[in-house]
Length: 314
Image (cartoon, rainbow, N blue to C red; front, side, top):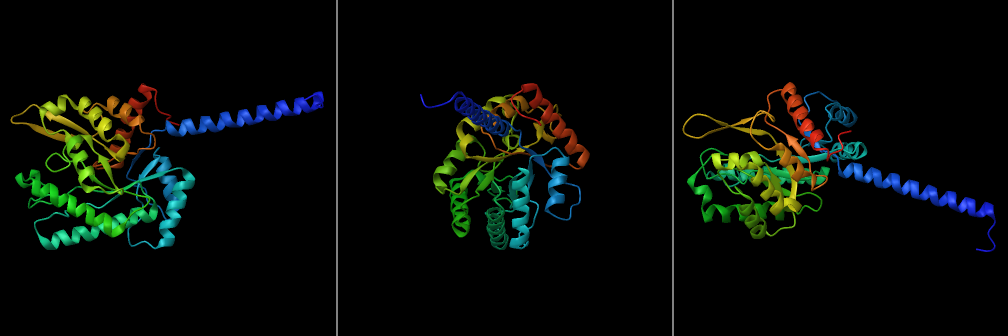
């Protein structure tokens, strides 16, 4: 130290300050990203290429998006959209595989299994957080209720089916997830935990739709605790969430209707607080008839988030 001049010390101090400032900025950027509300939804605007898609997503105020390409797209096109999303810091939240892979009709079941494999492969190709489907139903309706849906046989069939899909594709950077449902497994946090343990595959994860779990007045009025329970038990496994709302009607017997976010009884303050504990988890709006309805839903979610003060909404 005795050999250093005052000029050397000044240079050293300035360099150290610059490093500290850069570190502070980097930490701030990381913190800001961790606090981002990764809200997304469908894109109604027509686009011609990956850049046009990115611009359409950002014009909506979204940081998350549904997969923008079909499974038939070439590897070059898929890679272009993945690169565009990464450069724009947009999360491709999920690829849908909506079908009934436990159908009582064998031809329908085989077609559904093929669709699940194809869509999971697409999610793997584009780097989506998950490929999502319902577990299926033993009803005549692909997503309908049936007493058989809650049997041990149905549970075992879901386990066998999900394993077969995962073992066929062997994903390494995405996951296959089953959306929570009111009248089929997984119908609760605990039944989802049972499935996670029974399926026993690294590529299996959780897709949370809390509205689909609200199937009684008791769950309707206690939905805040239901949401907390889901995140407490399943949080680290959740890859994507759906955003919608539910309304209990004043007519007998029980009538529960899915409605636009902000017009029902789901506790979005609790939902967003719990979501904030798991940075990077997308929240995807769905099941609305128009771009205007999606805008209203997004405004409500962002309004609740702003009131909480725990998200970066820039």
